[in-house]
Image (tube, rainbow, N blue to C red; front, side, top):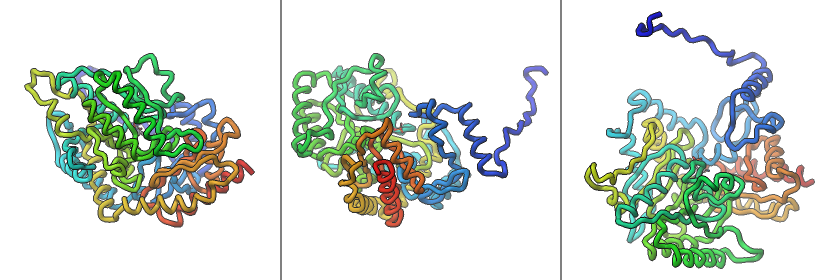
Length: 463
Ligand code: PMP
C-alpha cells in the first residue's frame, strides 16, 4: 500500500475483558499483570505471593475487587481521596468539562478552569502580615511540583544576583522520586542508591526523631540550632530550605513541634533563603487545617501542593509562589529570565474541573473542620492500642496517622495490614509503620471499622 494513503484502522479485539466466573477473571488479570506490568515501589519477586487485589470499581469510601469483595479505603488511595470515590458532584464537573474542552496546552494559551482554579487556590492559601502567595504554577504530580519549586528557588536567587547552588533539607524527608526531589529527600532506603547522581545538598536532622523521653519542643529547638549553625557556615550559598511541615509522611508519619517551622522561617529570613513547604501530603485539609504551616502561623515563599487537590480523581499539582519570586522572573524574552519549565498536560482542564468541584464541596461541607474532628475521633479510638504489646508508638496530626509496630518478621507492618485486609480494610504500611490516612469525609462507623480491623490485625500478628 502506498505510504501516503490513509489506511482504515480496524481495532483488533483485545483479550476478553469479562469472563463469567469472577475467580477466573481475577486470576486471568493477575497472570497478565505478572507478564506485562512493573508496579511502583514493588518487589516483583514477591508480588504474586502477596496476592494483590484487582480493583474493579469503587463506591464512596469503599474499593471493590474483581471478586466483589469490598474494602474500606483507609489510606484514601494513597492519601488523595477527599469525599470518597465517584462523588456525583465531581463526576458531573468532569463530565461537563469533557463536553466543553478536553485538553489544550497551558504553554502560550490559557483556559477558564486553569484561571479559576488558580484564583481558588490563592483564596485558600496561607497568608500572613508580611508574606502572601500570589502566583500558581501548575505541574502534574507531587514530585514534578517539588522539582519545579527547587528549580524556581535557584533561578530566582540567580536572577536577583546571587549564585546559591545549595539546598538544605531534612533527614527522613520525602518529596518525590524525580532526581531533584530525591536530592532533597532523606530516606536512606529510597534515596541512598542515587547519591552519586544528585544535586549538592546539606541535610539537617529530623525534628521528628527524638531521643527517648525528649520533648518535641526541645527537639525542634535542637534542629533549628543545627540549621542556624549550618547557615552561619554556608548560608550564602543556599537557595532554599525544603521541609515537610508538621508531618514527615513517607518517613513514617514522623511528627514535630510547630516551633520547628517558626525557627526555619526565621533562619530563612535572616539568610535571604527561600522556605519551601512541601504540603503535598499535609495540604488541603489532612492536618485538620487547610495547610500544615497554618498550625505554626508561618507562610513559606514556595508552597508545593498535589495529591488531594482534585479530590483524588486526577493528577494535578502546583507550586504557589510569592510575588517577589514571580517578579524575579520578569525581563525581556532575550534576558532568559523565563522559567523554562513545564509539562505537556500542565493544568489539564479535566483535572482543574475536578479540583474546582472538590474545593467547592470542601467549602460547602466544611470538610476541613470535619477532618479535624475525624482526627480527634481516630486518636480517641486508637488510644487503647498504645498499650498493645505489638505497638511501639502512635503518631498523629489531624487525620495523618502512623501506628509503629515492633518488628517481628521481615515485614511486620505489611503483615498487620494483610490481616486487616481480611477484615475488610485496606491499609498500606511504610515499613513498620501502619499508616491510616482516611478520606477526609469519612464518618464515625467507618472510623470504628478501621480501628477494629487494625486491632484484629495486631492481635493476630502478635497474638
Ligand atoms: N511530597 C510529599 C510530601 C509526598 O508525600 C509525596 C508523595 N507521597 C510527594 C511529594 C510526591 O508526590 P507524587 O507521588 O504525586 O509525585
